[in-house]
Length: 460
Image (cartoon, rainbow, N blue to C red; front, side):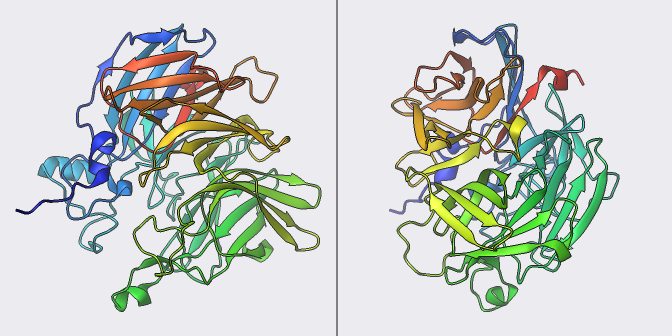
């Protein structure tokens, strides 16, 4: 008798939901604040058809799950992002693209899934994916408008984590590549015009998932998760973490180019996500989730690292005068998907929020940690026994005068009930029960990153 192992990312609450629904008047346990008005939208992978070959969690078609909140009431809808890949497979009635763990398919166009994150900029919600162009999304309908290429000025890939300066309104993004130029850096004006794209020299191609901005600088992370066509020709992995290579952090003036980059070297590590960065006199300070190494795409350099894939809160200080860099761990708890109050992005933030990872081989979050970077202390909100959430997004109260005056929102799945809900947590009292739980009439699979779209943006 033969048994076939079930891919964990196609099972349980990682499994896709194929039905698109719209529902009004959701049941609310507790009370939604009257001044909480807007829409929480989260992106994530949700394969339309049974995958070809080995499926990786990063492969699935993008699906948006949105809860609209207004006047203490909530509605829900979910929609696939109708990319070219989704359309072609929908017409074929089956999967055409294989995934990251399978050989490349040069006969097919880019399999852009638009499945990773969301950003609001210049009057438009964009669904983003680091291998290709963003997709414009109409809200609150969650309808796909189409690829967004800045009037055909977009010449590179587009990061899953663009950064919007809350003061100037500019948006910074980058695209990385397997082939030179390995990194291209772009700035978009507050009005949505792609102003410039400049190449940044790297020794070789690397997977660069995130970056950071300050008031005056942009910080790139040249970390040793490397692409090597030569390796692939030898039958070795194209993408591999090379623990004997150092990590490098490049700091560039926002409107600078390759001639202005200052590189700082640290011991080998990997960072998927940054909290924030800011300037402190002669120093640029970066706060991020650091791991010793990563096997996220199934390849490593055969060195056993018991600390691989465990992200922990770290802070780096890069002195632009002396060239010195310091690195310190701020907390030993495993935590990922960090967020801050984005009204202060690029400036000092006292607080940060991240998903508290459960002891599991799967990326499950059992709670959310609120960090106080001034005191070095933290508080944790636990979702409860058998309940796992995702990235929590900070929503500032419209009349707030304090940085943490607002709410944390995320989807939570109850494994015992096999049910999903949106939880709303008072960010100034995170250890208490949620102030509201919005019950959702079908399962919301675990996903990646979300965004809060304000009432003003919905009416833009």
